[in-house]
Length: 84
Image (cartoon, rainbow, N blue to C red; front, side, top):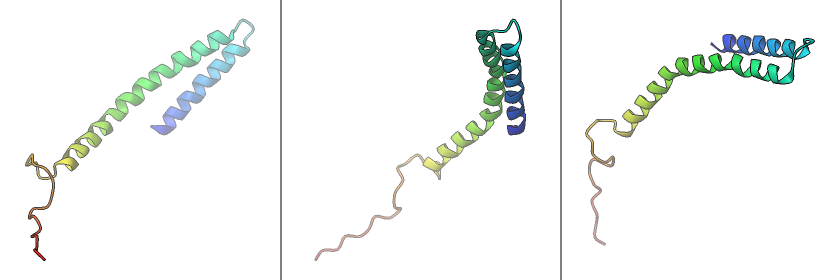
């Protein structure tokens, strides 16, 4: 996924450079080409990483309450207090 993303950014960057260096090209056109070329990549990366975000959230929820009992975490047996 990383290789495809880097290649996508490279190609969109080349398109933007070609747009600005063309005889009728403008900097604004190149910026729009760059932004509109990177928008689909952002959507694809967001969708691709959604599963890992869900997995991390599920692990975080299970780490908070490991036994699923719903009670506060702590020692199972309170320490015995000795009188001096």
